[in-house]
Image 1 (cartoon, rainbow, N blue to C red):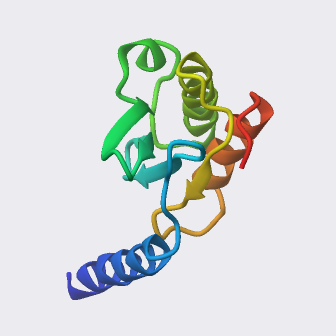
Image 2: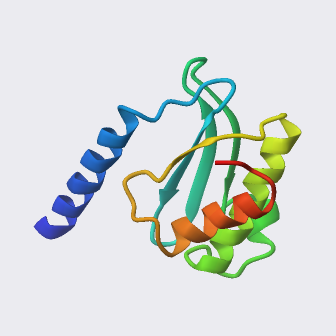
Image 3: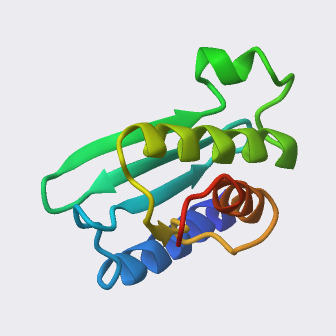
Length: 122
């Protein structure tokens, strides 16, 4: 059980270290990603205003109807597409990517590449 707490502590430290430099502004808001075992969540945040501009997750009703399970790469790709669409509705084209202390691999990579493919620049 202690190794799980240690893993979370290390991820949190990595995330805080990155957050010292990565700040979302109104020109380039921050695309934040959180990954759990069963789901993946992302938000586009303007840190200066302190507001969430757009959000998408595998728990959203429209995404949930498209997937069977939220903890895989296919689900992450769909969430990436959805967040890019939501950003375009709000007039956001450029973002700063915040991996949340995770490796750029697997679901995080799939979400990022899907968002890029659907015209979100970062």
